[in-house]
Amino acid sequence: MNQPCFVHAADLHLDTPFEGVRQDAPEMAELLRDASLDAFDRLVDLTLERGAAFLAIAGDIYDGADRGLRAQLRFRDGLARLAEAGTPTFVVHGNHDPVEDGWSAIRSWPDAVTIFSAHEVETRRVELGGAPFATVHGISYPQRAVHENLARRFARTDDPGLHVGVLHCTVGHQPEHDPYSPCTVEDLRATGLDYWALGHIHRRAVVHRHDPWVVYSGNTQGRSPKPSEQGAKGALVVPVEQTGGRLEPREPEFVALDRVRFTEVAVDTDELTEISEVADALATAAHDARTGAEGRALVLRARLTGRGPVHRDLARPGVVDDLLTGLRDQVAGGDPPVWWDRVRDETRPPLDREALRARPDVTGEVVRLVDRLHAEPDELARLGGEADRILRSLGHDVPEGRPLADLLGEAETRALDALDDGAGG
Ligand SMILES: [Mn+2]
Image (tube, rainbow, N blue to C red):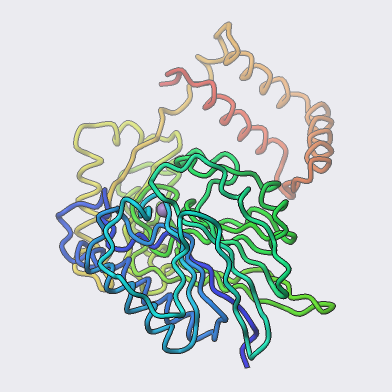
């Protein structure tokens, strides 16, 4: 028998239009058109395979308030499939699909489906094997912009079992997302609930462990090549254990459900002397990304960093575009498809230390200090020991087995990069 568990997902964004992926990759465009819906079907499969007690979906089911019919029917069919197996689903709406702004083609849902209202927090009880298992609490967004701290409306009831909150909200400072329904971990803890199944932030994160668990499952399918949409996307299976007569959630298990994966690779060009080596390094990175994606289609972005001789070549007109075209040709016709979205050149000119040393400013001071330390190994060793002590006291790992002179060189490069005002060759 499976361990008792429930499934937490959010931000399905069904029928998402996938901004930022261009028209000139027809195979990829076709895959992307169905990717969010396929990920949802896989979510239903996962819930059934694990024999989960219920599925909680924390908002942004649809990408836009107009909610395409195709997405609505697919969603209903999936929840009906769960209902037939006796598995309840709990759904809240978020800022992308608020209750009052949206058009709903579906007027009746199976009994096992709860779409939480936008008026007040509602609670539903779930049984497992005839015994009380959980109470699920939730509230939807009435309209897009919700500035009220909805977490404050939740409170644990006397019902036995696990108490799970389903909410679309912003915990703490989240610069990449609109701060809808802002709250703190303390607000969530004060409710007395055991697990917060949250949505809105697309990057998966366990914000707080135990009493309560505060967790963003992230979205089920990446939507664009930007950072919060990169990497594996899917849902969380949350195991539940009985300890001392009490049911408690355990560390959630992530299961990837995405069909198309957005990945960024970074290539450091410091040691490269020719453009052909840059192309080779990118091809290798693509190969590795493909292996890591386990049979999924890939949308790739590359970032070129470092200060090497190829900087000058990359800066010539048309070179980066040609590099991109060459990469696209290499992966054309692959199955599963791979699409290079962009190559960004962030390389900088090699540093001219002689010129920098002569400068009267902080940049010059950094170079002179590094030279002094290289000339005085005892002083360097003393500083190295001091740095180790500070790192340890802050709970950081101390790099081992690397000569201090190497570390000093790296520190200099970082400092000079940070101070860079166009200095260099
Ligand atoms: Mn969302």
